[in-house]
Every structure is written in structure tokens, then in C-alpha cells.
Amino acid sequence: MAHLLEKMAYVGRTPWHGLGNRLARQQPIEVWTEQAGLDWHIRESQVRFVHNERDRLGEILSFDGQKVLYRSDTRAPLSVVSKRYQVVQPREILEFYRDLTEVSGFELETAGVLKGGRKIWALARTGQSGVLKGNDQTNAYVLLATACDGTMATTAQFTSVRVVCNNTLAVALTGAAGSDERR
Picture 1 (cartoon, helix red, strand yellow):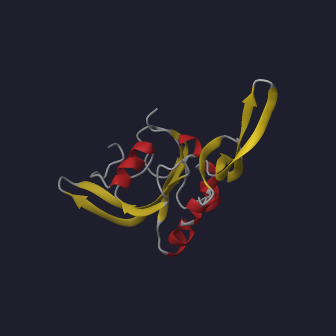
Picture 2 (cartoon, rainbow, N blue to C red):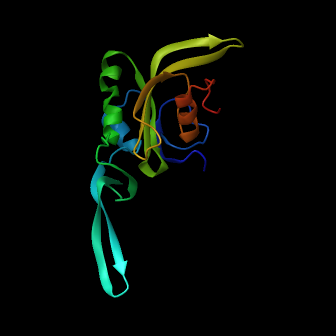
Picture 3 (cartoon, rainbow, N blue to C red):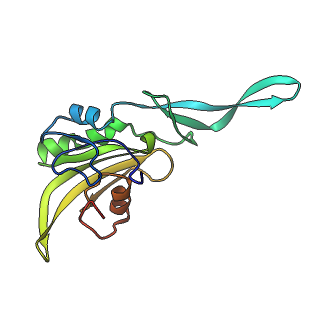
């Protein structure tokens, strides 16, 4: 399961792995939020641990300067981060596209959750495309992705990679050559 996909939504052609919820074009952000699995919040809590000694009950201590991030829906832990870490909520990833889709003509194409919620992304087609030698078509997208496990910062960038899983997200973020989601 190298794709590390928990849930996603898409329009257009089915992703290479055959997973996800197919949506009709021009769906509102609210539909994308639910169908892409982004309908939960990242919550924060102090890091606590139990210090046990042989002859005593455990003492609960806190780890100052750190906090635990966890999912509101499953309460599954996502990561331990510093108190300075600024949370980007899953819904905020899609809200980024609201003006782009309403005013600029961009269209959401894929969005989803990876690694149990540790990574999330959304991708919109810009409407720009080109043809490469051999009649291969390439499309331009705007990608917004973030991770709460320390593996990447919140990133917005143009790409020609149709992100549908962890593998294609990695390719898009490294700028590796390729315009096809199967690479």
C-alpha cells in the first residue's frame, strides 16, 4: 500500500490505483470536504506521560514545550510538535481554492488524506495545457499540501503532476519530471 491513501475524491479519469470517490464537475467545497475525507479537525493537547517507580503509583508529568496533535473524529494521534507549530486545518486546504475556482476558473480535480491524516492535499486544474512531442498532453495544476508530522511544510505550487496518492505527491513536490499520474 505504497500509495498511503486513506480517502480521496476526484473528477475526471479514475486514478491509477482505482481508489477514491468520483465527483461530478463543479461541486461545492462542502461536497469536496466530505467526499475527500477532510471533514474533521486537528486538535491539540499537552504531552503527558506516566513516571512509574516500583513502590508507588505512577505520577503524571507533562512535557513542556510540546503538544500532541490528534484527529477530532477518531482521536487518533497524528504527531508530537513544538508549541510554536501552527496547525493548518483540513478544511483550510480546500478553502484556499474557493476564490480560485469561483473567480479564476480553476477546477478542483483531486483532494484527499494520506497516512491516517498526517498529510492532506488538494489539487486544482488551472485550465492551462500543452502538447508534448508525440501528442502527449500535459495539464497545469495548483497544488496545496501540508503535513502535521514534520515531513513537509504547508506548500502551494504549480505542477504538471496529477496528485492522487503519496507517490505522486512526492513527485510533484520534488519537481521531478513527469506529467502522468502513474509515474
